[in-house]
Image 1 (cartoon, rainbow, N blue to C red):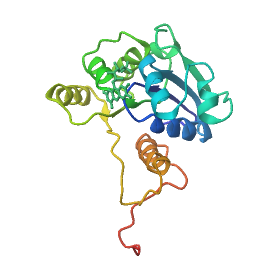
Image 2 (cartoon, rainbow, N blue to C red):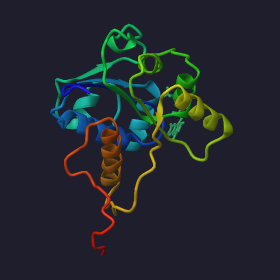
Image 3 (tube, rainbow, N blue to C red):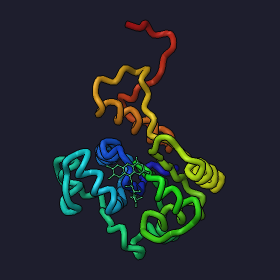
Length: 203
Ligand SMILES: Cc1cc2nc3c(=O)[nH]c(=O)nc-3n(C[C@H](O)[C@H](O)[C@H](O)COP(=O)(O)O)c2cc1C
């Protein structure tokens, strides 16, 4: 993977807006990441309003980061003519965080009906890393089958299951740790990330 990375971040309407917020912060702060193509689904906006009390698409990045960020380009979910809709536009990885069962189903079956689904389809056809941070509980057999289908097509199923052995003191810390794991998986290890050391003394 090259040093200067271009990452696609899609946020869909599953619970876990805090993960998306932490991911955006990490990508914005990472000097190796030169461009983030961000797509937030309409249904994700509904969940963001519920979970983080943020309303509307306008100024969303500023609200999440506390300041504007030049390297983040937000695309409407409906813009199937955006750069990331084409395989000729080079991206290093696409992360869907959180990934709803609806978007999982669409990706698993190649529907490509909005920009998130199309960009994921393109990521798979170009054999680039596609990380689906799925969230639902419990799973029905359709969810399980769709995860298998997506995995067989090359996606990584990376459920938003937090670790507790690092003793997170807040939901933000828990989410940050999860984000660190995702970024390490695509070759972007983060400074300060928790790494399990079995021999370290425990309190
Ligand atoms: C507060 C809230 C929480 C939700 N949580 C989930 C969830 O965890 N997983 C999921 O698959 N859908 C969840 N949904 C339902 C999705 O938002 C819904 O299926 C939607 O159609 C997904 O659309 P999208 O994939 O285009 O964003 C939730 C909806 C709301 C309002």
